[in-house]
Length: 75
Image (cartoon, rainbow, N blue to C red; front, side, top):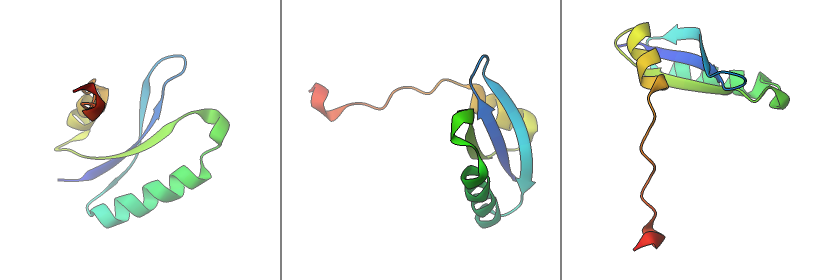
């Protein structure tokens, strides 16, 4: 399965933009770090790496709302 690199922007709408695709995590991770370093801070976008079967699956996973992490202080 390939690793996809996406740029996520949230203003005014949540937009997904596929930037690259890599076969190895090491290559995808290094490239994502370089893209994050070059991203202007005022842009407010995120660079994400995701492992998925295809582009459609990657975009579906990135679009899903994740459940909040449990807070240990809530006990």
